[in-house]
Image (cartoon, rainbow, N blue to C red; front, side, top):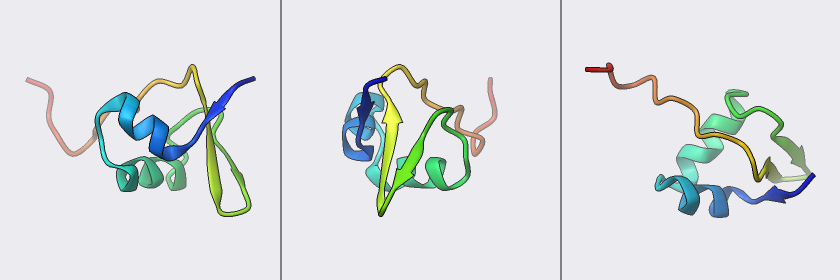
Length: 56
């Protein structure tokens, strides 16, 4: 399985690196694993739904 970093995921999804870290810490990204101080995210992972906004 191929993995990307939080910075690469942030660029792919158009959000901040910090927000990706928050998703990882809350276990909202399926398959994300922590290796030392670095989160590894599967390349095929989908961006979690932002729960701060209501859907129209």
